[in-house]
Length: 248
Ligand code: 13P
Image (cartoon, rainbow, N blue to C red; front, side, top):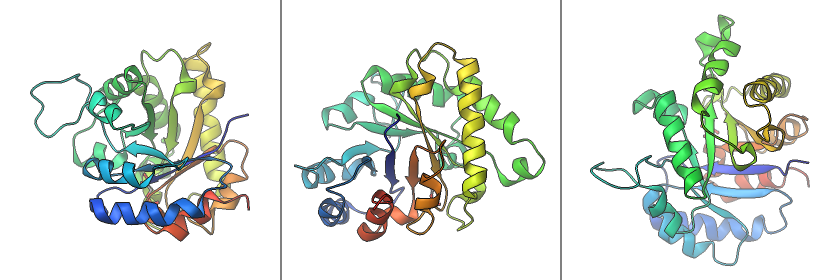
C-alpha cells in the first residue's frame, strides 16, 4: 500500500512570520492525519516554519534546489543548505519554474539527483498545457518528461511525482477525478515500462491543480491518486486541514 501524501505549495506567499502563524494554526487541525503532511515554503521562511513545526509530524519542504554542491550560482540554494534545516521534501520542476525561470527537463533531472543524493525526497512536477491536451498530445508530453526527468534514478520509492495539468493550476478548473485517475494511471504504467525493476510500484503520484476541500475526497478515492499538491487552498489552515483530513 502506498501511504497518501498531501503537500502544500505556498509558492511566493507568506513572510516568515506569516508562515509561522499559519503552521501554528495548522498543527492542531491535522494532528490525527492518516497521511503524510508536508508544507513547501519559500526558502526564507524555512527557519521560522521549522520552529513552528516543533513537536509536529508535518514535514518541512522547499520549492526548489540547485544541482551543484556549492559555488558561483548567485541566488540559488543547495541541497545541503536545505538538509541542515531538516528539509525533507523539495518540489522540483513546477510548471511555473519551467515557464518563467527557464527550467528544462535536463535541469529538472539534475536537481532531482542532487536532492536524492542529500537524502531529500523530490516532488517532481510533470503535466501538459491546455493546448497539448486539446490537440491529443498529453501522452507524448508526459512520455517525454518521463524519459528525460528521471534518468539515473535507481529507487523510485524515494521520489514523489506530482501530476499537475497546467490548465488546472490556479484556474479553478480541476481535472475530473476520472481524468486525473486515468492520466496518473498512464504515468505509472509508462514509468514501470521505462524504469522496470526500479521500485516504481512503490512511488507515490499526487494530483495537483485547483484541489480543494470540496473535491479532495473524490480525487483521493481514486485508486491511482496517492495524494495532492495544493497551491491556493494550502494558504489557509482550515482549508488545507480539510484536504488533509479527506478521510474523516
Ligand atoms: P492551485 O492549487 O492553486 O491550483 O495550485 C496547484 C499547484 O500548482 C501546486 O503546486
